[in-house]
Length: 105
Length: 239
Image (cartoon, rainbow over all chains, first blue to last red; front, side, top):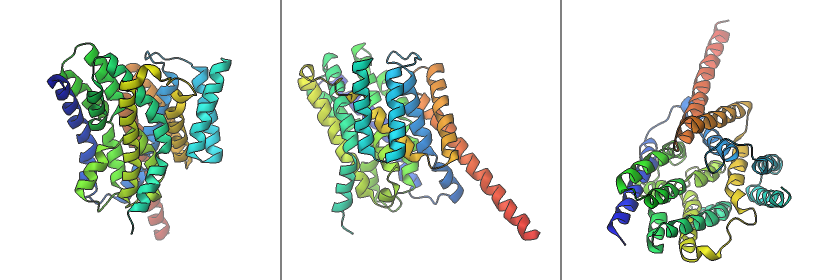
């Protein structure tokens, strides 16, 4: 392996590890106030919506677009997982709807 | 307590993530190979760094003949978002050995975090569940990457709806989080502000900024409503 590539890989590994590790290392050893804990319960919702919306409304070139294929598939998964509450089934359904719509559109 | 069972449970719950990681890993391996990275380097990067978005960006930057300093800096900023997830998971992993926490946090990704937070009862004080979930996902990413680097040109990864596997996973896990009207509110704030930040800023800041904003509002609302409730109870007590 080449030195430059190794420097890139190890550098990336270190700077990726630190923000993953430090909060866990310190906060597990700290008693978190109850209210703050309840507030942190919203963090997964905040992170997931911050990930999902741009997937739906931006194309690969980073432009804002309306993508019917993505939106219709997303709405199907949303409704299905709301009703059925199964991760596996929802992922398979999303793939099938997307695949099917690809043929039609 | 047997450690074997929760580990297997975690590995099982990782399967939807595996379904998403394999094709994306293959895509990564393929692109990395095209940018002149060898299959063993691809495998090492996926094993040690294990953060999709930053790996794709690194390949792009390597392709543009950039040196390690800007690549490592860009990686740091893209992956900074994990500190929020790490903070959140820490609530459920008290009394876990530091060495085990090191291993768990090294494998923390958006997807494994998302699955973990939808199974909090299994996560609570059960690091081996998280370990099973994450090792399985990590393995899929490494295998997919190496596979893509070796056999990329012969594999069709854009078929069978595979490009929508990870979006489906995220949407479903988001739905699982929506337990109250407040959660819906947080979703709207997080989603729309993320769109705004992505539109307004270059790079990958939008997830971190939107999550901080929406999460911050969530914490604020809880603290304020908690105070009002305490105040109301106090007044009732006086009356």
